[in-house]
Length: 259
Image 1 (cartoon, rainbow, N blue to C red):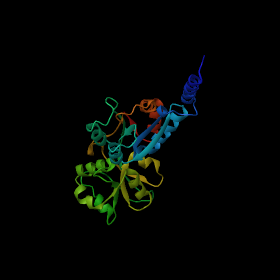
Image 2: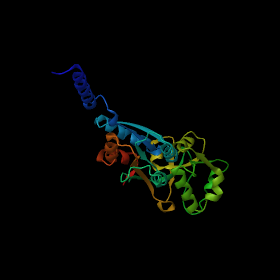
Image 3: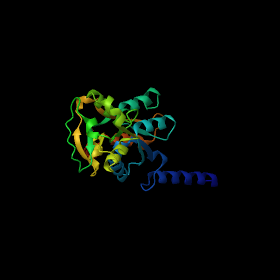
Image 4: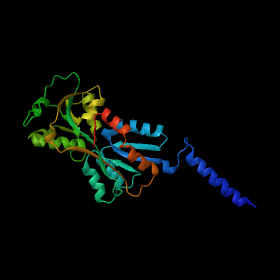
């Protein structure tokens, strides 16, 4: 004979099973949070939408500078996946044993470019010693803060290799992330800026004045990994989905190269 207590346990088990397999509802294991570099905002937003439409899980994303996100993760922020715009900040977490062993891989590549407003008459030919300081005059150069923002770090490395960083440094408008640098140029606050090619591609309010030579800075690489101690099924599924043909199509649409 089934007692009232057993019946309650049976009904509870049935409810939990139905809750977890019913597509409109998502279990805790079907949710995950991605912390991703600001430059990946548009592409990753589209990929998350595809992932959700396939009923594979519910993904929440937080976008900011890789340095900001890495430090938030270090302090216990609820991230399941970290996508960095450079290896430095992924290394930072890996050295602190905060990444799931064996989950890290290089996902994307990018380029840095010099941008200007669409109606700008500035003509630029990037080469050793080119007069970027003279082009700016009394104005500023928008760029991610080279002390911690990946796009700014790459920009500084390029300008150093070209022999002009020392004279240009005082003119740098150091932004909290690459999208902030893009906005300064788009809004006409600065005549020139350094951003990723993918950022320039999404805005109709800027144009690419020149592309920095690939040999002027280290290769731009976006590594991705699971955060240590996070085992949500959705996180693992999404990490794998980032390598899928569908995700690759989206990344390439926004100008990334896929590793």
